[in-house]
Length: 294
Length: 136
Image 1 (cartoon, helix red, strand yellow):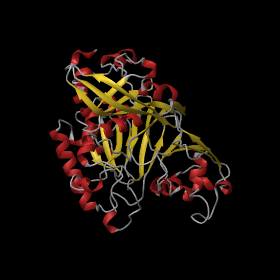
Image 2: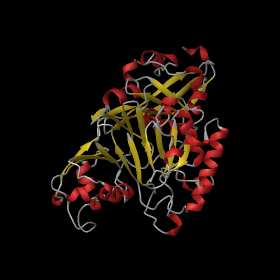
Image 3: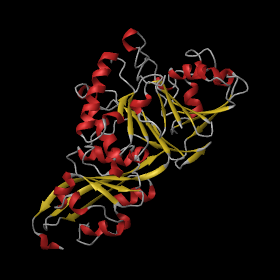
Image 4: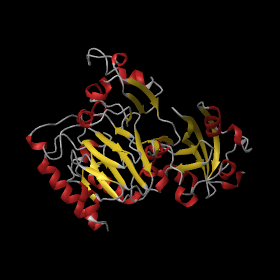
C-alpha cells in the first residue's frame, strides 16, 4: 500500500511562501492498494494535484470522505478524472438523517457555488453511505466509524495485506475526556487506529492554542500524542495543519512532537508532521525515511 | 475489543462534566456509566461498581414506588426509553448503599442515531432524602 499526501492543511487553503514545505492545499491523501486500486481520502484542494498526477486514466476510483466541511470537498469540481466520461468514481461518506450524501454534496456542486451540477459531471459518479460493517475495495478491507468532530464525521481504517492505515484528520477525542485515563473502548476512534502501521491524525493546534479552540473539533499536540500512544500505532503523521501555521512554526511543532514522543518511550523517527507530496510505503518504511520521497 | 458508539462516548463525556446525577445504558440496556453526582446519590462510585447487566441494576438500588413496593424493571424510565425509543419520566424512591432513601424524579430519553438506537440517558433530580434506611 502506497500513501501519498496531496493536501495536509486544515480549514482553508493557505498557499504562500511561508507554507511552501508543508503545503497549503487542504486535506487529500492518495492511496494505491497492493492490487493497484486507487483511493482518495477526502477531496480538499489537494485532490486537484492528485488528479493531474494520475499518469494513466483510472477506470475506477473511490473517494472516501470523512465529512463534508468545505476543506474536505472543495477540490471535487477540480478533479480531472471527474471530467472524463470513461471514469467511474464512487464517493463514500457519512450518512445523515437530514439528506442523502448526494444531495448534501450537491449543495456545493451547484449554482451559485459551482459552474457545474452533479448531473453534468461527465464521469460515472455514484454516492454511497459508508456501512457500519467492514467492506472491501480491491485488495483492502475498509472500516469507517464516527469520530468526535463537529457534525457527522468518519474516520477510516484500510487494511491491505499486513499493512494498515488509519486516517482520522479531524478529531477531538479529548473533548471532555482524559485520554490517559479512559478505557480504550471509550476513546473516540480507538478501534480504527489500534496498532495501525500508519496513523494520519489531526494535529491542528499547539498546546497553547487549544484552550481558545475547545470544542472546535480538533486536537492539541498533547492530545494527538496521547491518542497515538494509547492506540499503539507504529508510525504517526500529524495532519490538518492550522492555516495560520507557517513552515517555521510547524518545524518547531515537529521538533517538540519528536522530543515528547521520545520522552514517552517512542522513537522520534516514528512521528512527524505531514508535508504535501510526502509518500509512505506501508509497512516497509518509517515516516522519517519516506518523507522526502517526493 | 468492541468500540463504543461515538454517541455513547460523547454522552459519557458530557455526563462526566455535569453535577446532575445521570445514568447511561447501551442499546442492550447494560448500565455502562453513571457520573460522580449519581455516585454520591447511590453511595457508590461507578468505578467501584463497573458495568452492570440489565437484570441486575434495576434492583440494586430499588427503585420503589410511593407505597414502598419495587417498581417492575419494565416500567423504569431508562428501560422504556431504550426499548421503545421514546422519552419517559417517573417519580420514585431509591436506596443508596448507606441506607439513605432518596425520592427522585427521573427523566430518560433514547439516543437515536442514523444507525438506530444506541442506548439511553437518564437524569435524576433528587427531591428529598431520608436517613431512615429501615423503611423497606
